[in-house]
Length: 426
Image (tube, rainbow, N blue to C red; front, side, top):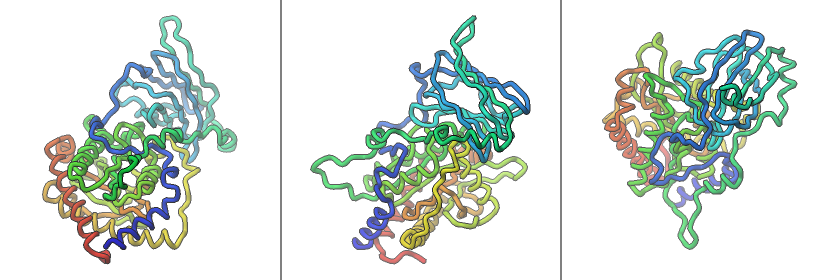
C-alpha cells in the first residue's frame, strides 16, 4: 500500500518538473480567514462610472469615464478577433448588462478583474481592426477623466502585422508573488503527508460564466467551493488548495498547473450550467470526466463553452502549449482516468441522496481543465442556473451544506478505497 502511494507521488513529481516554478499564477493556500466570495469595493481603486460605444462597421470609438487618471495598455488578438485594454484594478460601477450588445465594428464587450491588481476590458470584433488612437483625457469643463479608444477596420494582412510579441503581455504575477503564494513548510516540522485536494471554482473576474436572474455562475461556484474547502479542512484528513478564493480570473492551463505543481491527489472543478430556452429545461447536477470523444451532444456543447474561458478573458491563444507525447505521461493518463471515473461514480452515489441529479449524471468530454495527466480530475456542474428549481438550490445555504457534506463522503470513500487496494478498478 505504501509502495503504491509512493510510486504515485514519484510519478506525479517527475511529470511536474520544477513544481513551484511551473505555476505562473498565484497558488492560493487555504486559510480559515478567507470567506468572502467577492472583492469588497475599495475607495483606493479608481472608479469606472460610465462606458459608451459609438461608430459603425468601419470605425468605432469607446469612452470610459473615470474618477481619476490611470495608465493602460491596449492590444489586439486574433482567432477570434479581439481588442484588449489592460488597466490597474478598478471598481466598475456600471449598469447591469453594459457591454452585452455592441455597435458596428464591435459585437460586444466585457470587463472585470483579471488578476490581483489588474482589470481588463475585452472587445469582440466583427472582423480584423487596428487601434488608431488611444489616450486618457484630463478632467475638464465639468467632464471627468476619460479613457478613449479608437478602432478602424483593416484587412487580415494589416491586422497580422500589428501583432508584435511585445503587444501580447502574459497574465502572470511576479516571481516574488508566486513564491510568496506557495505554501511553505515551517522549519523543524515534518512534511505534511496528507493528500492534497485542489478545488477549482470555475470562471472568475472578467469571466462571469452563466447567469440568470442576476445570479452569476462565478459567484455561486466560488461560494460553494469555499464551503467545500471549509468542510474538508474541518475533517483534518486532507490539505486543500484553492485555484481562487476571490473574484479573480485564472486561465485554464494555469488551473491545471496549480494541481500538478502541488502534486494533487484530486482535482475538483466546480461549475453551474445553463441552457437556452429553446433547448429545453434540463435540471440537476452532472459529473464530467475527461474523454477525447464527448459522451453526448450536451457534453460536447458544454466542453466547447467551458473551453472558451481564456478567449473570453482576452488570453492570447496562439501560445497554447501542444500535447506532449511521452510514454510515462500516457501511462499516467491511463491510470488517472481509472481513478477519475471511480471518483465520479462515488460522487453520483453520494450526491443523489442530497441533490437533484441530471437524468444522465455521468458524462465525459474534452474539458481542457481536466487534462492533467497525473491528477485524477472531475468537473461538477451543480445544476442549471436556467432552471428555476436548480437556481433556488444554488442560492440556498441549506442546500449547499447538504451537497458539500455528500461530496466529503465521496472524497472519504475515494481515498479509503485507493489506500486499501493496490489494483485500480477496471
